[in-house]
Image (tube, rainbow, N blue to C red; front, side):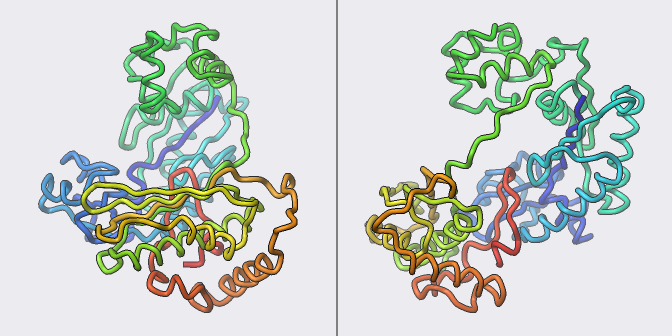
Length: 400
């Protein structure tokens, strides 16, 4: 049996915990104080007005004129994340940190008895409240496997506690929409519909062969077993890509500013490559403009992980239109190769790699502004530490 704890409106809740003046008020966490950016998170008071993650700030203000905007400080979210993990570990061992705001714990022996698992869940809530902060509420799901426990944690928010019992399967899942199941997004929902699966009841009734055909492989079998309460797990896969993006502040909404930010994002991504021992063979960059249009370009490379090779690749593909006002830069490194599979090339620049690693060491010890590439001068304070919900950055690595 598994217990999954999902922190409610995590970023906004941390801000309310840190600042008593924000408590009980509609709050939206944003990357910058610009109407053209989007909300990263919203407090439950803001959600009551229809504001959610991804809502444009301009729209959010129209929905709630009294909305309070807070520029997110992601270091605080990481620090609170580790405090919460410590509190949870006092009550029950953590099996997996699923994201910045979600944790899975395996219940064994007498812990699996419903009365005892309920006590553990309530103890988790009270321990986080007492040791970390009363404004950090969570919803907890308890079910026969991790997949179903995650679903259960989303069924009652905020501050919920939901059981999915083996004898309740699959009936308890019938009220859900297809998109409520982890791993089913817009594209997968379309594939399910094309296969004649429109509802969760039809999904649960589908046999393993049909689901494997829809998913195009073993994920279909995973869903078949997981929906029936079997204790299955997803296969661990090697990382295939890194991505970074940044909404440009008004002062950098120019061709020169956009290119400086692109170089800044490139350096952040290359540091991750070296830290995690990956080599890159493909670079994609895109620019979204204020008028809604988009430019993108891409290039293949010899396996590399040094800044100079990557900057040269960026220079070769950077030919966006100069007459438009850029709003957002996105950069994607893919076709990654782990160090154990890297094949040295005759053209590999080992001196450049040594230089990059030396730069990493200096920045980690003395700060990111101790030394940096001149091309990032305009953007040296841009693209600060950011968290995707499935990736908790290393603060020392980011060094912002």
